[in-house]
Image 1: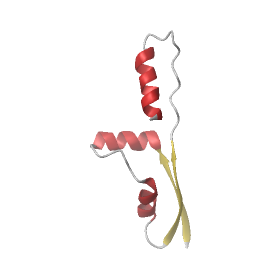
Image 2: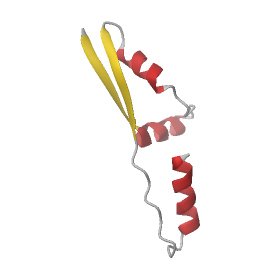
Image 3: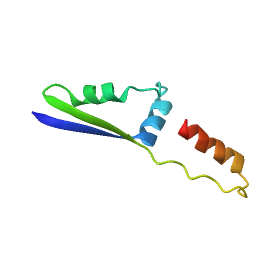
Image 4: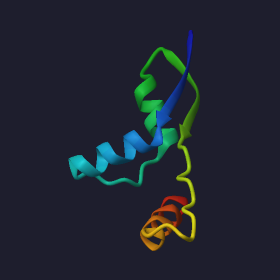
Length: 74
């Protein structure tokens, strides 16, 4: 039996869902099992994302960038 691990690029996945007007709250374990299909063993689903870099306080867009960072972490 084939064994499968699923790797999800969080940023691309999230923005594609938003652009398509779909819900962004996803059960990744269930998604991974569904993507694996019959006849294969779903081992693990990995969701990865790179955190935004915190802005410097002297950045003219500090408040906007800081809010984006906080929002991403939520």
